[in-house]
Length: 215
Ligand code: ATP
Image (cartoon, rainbow, N blue to C red; front, top):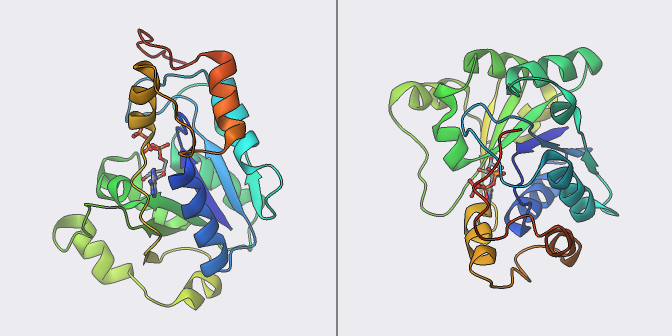
C-alpha cells in the first residue's frame, strides 16, 4: 500500500494526480492519505486539523483505492512518520508499505526523526517535482546507490527497504501558492476539486490576515 502524508493545507490536484498515478502505475492496492497533525519540520498549519481532514475526505470520496487515515490527527504531540509507519507495520505485518513523498520532501529526509529507521519499515517512493533533481551525493546519494531500484516488482516482493523514483505528471501547484492566492481575494478553482474549494469558501480558513495556528 502507498502511504501519502502531508499537511494538505489545502489538498490540491498536484497531490491527487500524484497519488492516482502511483496507485495505477505502481499497482498499489490502496493509497492512504495521512494528514499530519503537528508537523515537526514546519511549525504551523493554517487550516485547523479537522478542516484539513474534511478537505482530504471531500477530495478523495468515491475514488476506489483512495483511503483517508486520520491517525496522526488523533495522536498528541508531533507527528513522526517513523511512529506512523511502525504502527502500520504492526497492523499489516506481511504487506509491503511504501511511503510516497515529493522530491522536495525527499531532499529533506535526512532531517527527519529516525530517518534511517523509516527505510527499514517501508519503501520510499519519490514523486518527481518540477525544478528538483535527485541527489547524487551525500547521504541520499549513497542511499539511492544502495537502495534505489527501477523495478516495480521490488516494491511488491520486499516489504520495505527500496527507494523508487517515479515520474508523475508535473503539476506545478503548491498549497502555499493556493493560500496566497486566496488571501489576495482570488479564486482557487481548477487547482483542486470543487468539493475542496467549497470547504475553503464555507469556512473562510485562508482569509487574509490568518497567520496560521499551532495545533
Ligand atoms: P506547501 O506549499 O504548504 O509546502 P505542498 O503543496 O508541498 O504544501 P504538502 O501537504 O506539504 O503540500 O505535501 C505533501 C506531499 O505532497 C509532499 O511529499 C510533497 O512533496 C508532495 N507534493 C505537494 N505538491 C505536489 C505536486 N504539485 N506534485 C507532486 N507532489 C506534490
